[in-house]
Image 1 (cartoon, rainbow, N blue to C red):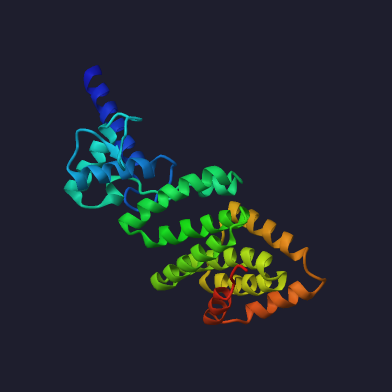
Image 2: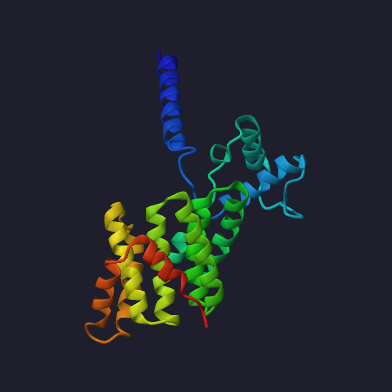
Length: 251
């Protein structure tokens, strides 16, 4: 009797663990900081045929036991889907919103490599947009604008309204420094209306960051001028604000 009860409890626990751990597999573009690194190692195993000695690029990867990478590579070989084989990487956004730009840059740069290789275009655009803001914060507006333009092309091509708004909001941050506060307000106003039309809301941490950026930029403008430019932006069409944003460039 006790043995049967223990057996039932074991299988119940195993079922619950499977449901908890397996929920959402293949449905997200995941982001814990180590996932891009493990994914790249597993991908190189499959492509090179060298499963005995894990490598990252040309370096022998000995930081972790290879069992995890073997499992990822085996699942990909059987299923043919990297999203199921591992949680594909878009790391670093959390570090960005915590203002740890150094760590965010390192994580997102590594994630971007994986996203490009695997072909997750929306992930590429999102990583580029955040890396652009980091470049802007570092004073490298040339690279910021280049990254934002590439991301804008991608999100318009794939038709992702939420990511389009995020990209335009980042363009506004850059425009506030290299053009004017009013130029930023035009883009922010247009992005706000596009968000409303798409019913796309911001997550709380992004909203806090967004409000900080708007407040800093508004402080550089005369009373009433910023608000007037914002309202003019709200009247722009998507095509107009995209063309406007693409005119933002570093000196």
